[in-house]
Amino acid sequence: MNFAPSALPFFSAKKPLSASTITRLSLLLALALPTQISAQNQQEALPLPLNEVKMFTQALDRIRMSYVEEIDDKTLLENAIRGMLAGLDPHSSYLTDDELELLEESTSGEFGGLGVEVGRENGYIRVISPIDDSPADRAGIKAGDLIIRIDSKPLREIMPEEAAQMMRGAPGTDVTVTVAREGQEPFDVTITREVISIASVRSRIIAPGYAYLRISQFRVNTGNELEEEIETLYAENAAIDQPIEGMVLDLRNNPGGILQASVGVVDAFISEGRIVYTEGRLEQTGLDYSATHKTVAGDVPLVILINNGSASASEIVAGALQDHGRAIIMGTRSFGKGSVQTVLPLDEKRAIKLTTSLYFTPSGRSIQAQGIEPDILVEEAFVTRRSANVMQYNEADLDGHLENSNTPSTENERLAEALISAEEVLVNDYPLNEALNVLKGINAFKPARIINTTGSFAQSDLN
Image (tube, rainbow, N blue to C red):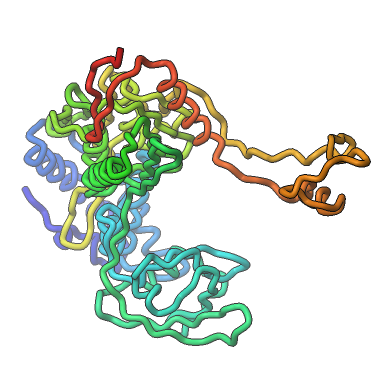
C-alpha cells in the first residue's frame, strides 16, 4: 500500500477524531509505512507500535481543537517532523526550501548578494569588510559602516544572519541600504546583487621559505582551491629562488563541511593509503576513500593547527594526516563531530538532513565525542610585550657619555620610546608562532638535502 498524505483522515479534518478513526489510522500507518521503508531500503522493517501511533494522533487532535490559536494541519505536521529529527541528535534537522537554499549556498560558496561581511554592534549591523571587487565594494561601502535600514526596514536589534539573508537575493535585483558613517548624515545606497563567490582557502608567506594556509570551511571546490594556492606559492618562491621548507595548515574554528572536500585536502599531502571510511546501518552509507598519486605538497614538513572549534571535515584532515605520520598536529583537542549527514529529499521544496553514518580515521579511530588529540598541546594565548624597567640604566644614562647619532638625544625621548602603557598589548598568534618554530626546528636538525620547487625532495645529501 502507498498512501499520499492527503489521503490520511486527520490531515484535513476540522472536527475531533473518533476513537474508531484513530484506531483505523493507527493500523493504516502500521501497515503502510513499513511497506514503504522496506521497499526503499530493501530490508525488513518492524511495524510501528500501535499504542504510540494512537497517542500521537490523539495529541495532534487535542492540539488542533484546544490550542489557544487555530493552527493548520500542515504546520503541525511539519513541527512534528522537526521535533522528531531534533530528538535524534544535534545535527539532524528538517529543511524547508529557504533552508535548503542556504545549505546549498554554504556548501558551494556562491550566492546572489552584495558581497559584504557583517556583524552586530550596539544593536546595529556593522560592516566588517566588503569583499574585494564585490557590488558593495564598488558602491563605496566601507569597513566600519553601520547599516541601519535595508529597503526602508529598520535593523535595530536584528541578528546579522537575518540582515545577511535580507541582502541576499537573485542576481540582477536591487536592494537599497541606508548607511550611517562617522561624520556624515545617513545616506541611501542602491546596489545590484551579483553572484558572490567566496574562497575557502587563503595563503601567505609568514617567513622566508615558510607558507601559511588557512581553510575557513570545506566547500565543494576546497580541494582544488588548496592545490591552486600551493602551486602558486611554489611558483612565486621559485621566482625568487626560495624553496618552500615548511607549511602550516590552519584549521582552527573550521566547522567542517563537505566530506569529499576533506578527502581532496588530504590527497594534496599524501600519495597513497586510506584517508577516511564511513560505516552506517545501510550498505550504501559505507564509503571508503583512498589517496591518489597526484600530490602537490610532496614531503614538505607540515604542521596542522586545530582547536575546539575544529570539527567534522577538519577532524578528518587532521586525523588522516596524523595517522599517516604526515603532519604534526598542534593546538588543543578538536570538537569531536564524527558523524556524517545526508540530505534526503521529501519533495521539491523539503528535505531532511539525517545522520546516516560515522566516519573513521585510517587507523580505525572514531572521533565522535572524542575529537583529535594534538601531538603538541598549545593553548590559545596572547603574547604581551613587557614594559621596560625604568630602574635599570645603561651607558646612555651615564653623565658625559659619547652620543650616538642613531639614538634619541634627550632623556624624555628615550623614556617615551622605552615605556608602553598597560593597555598597549601586542596580540600575536601564539600557536602559529609555535608551529613556525617547530618547522624551523625540523629543518635545523634534518640532513641537508636538495629541495626542488615542485614541493618534493630530491633525496640526496649534499656531502
